[in-house]
Each structure stands twice: as structure tokens, then as C-alpha cells.
Length: 100
Image 1 (cartoon, rainbow, N blue to C red):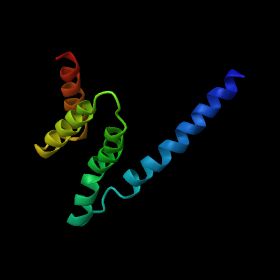
Image 2: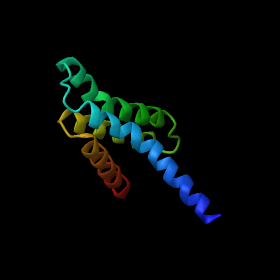
Image 3: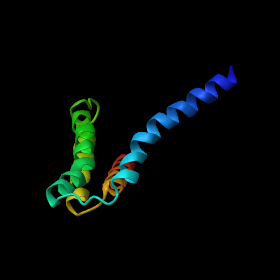
């Protein structure tokens, strides 16, 4: 039973790793046009927005919590923070909001 689970986990790891590794190994010398680099550079922020904005409208207890978190995320993004920085600043801002 335990060896079956190990091989299932190993197989799932390979299935998710191969599509991520192939573009890096096969296309690492191809230079993308500036337009496509700009599009790909903004994909994480668009994804972050798609995850955050619906959650703002679903908050029932304290709507200011969502508005404050969204505002801090937009401000951090506008100031040039990377995606992890935006998430960290938003979490920090909301932690301070709950403390105060």
C-alpha cells in the first residue's frame, strides 16, 4: 500500500515537472518580442487580481478589511513590488489592520 502511494506521488511530480522544465531547456535561447515579454510580465498581477477581487465582494463581517487589503495590494504593485512583495505587504497591512 505504501509503495503504491510513493509511486503515485512520484508520477504526479514528473507529470507536473516535465511541462515546466521543457520550455526552459528547449526554448532558453529564443528571445521574445518586447510586447510578449510585457504580457508575460503582467500575468502574475492579473492572476493575483483575479484571486483577490472576487474575495472582496464576499466579505460579510468587515468590508473595510477587503477594501484595505485590496488598496494595499494595488499600492504595492503600483510602487513596483514584485508579486511576492505585493502578497507580503498586503498580509502585513491586514495583520496591522486586525491588531489596531
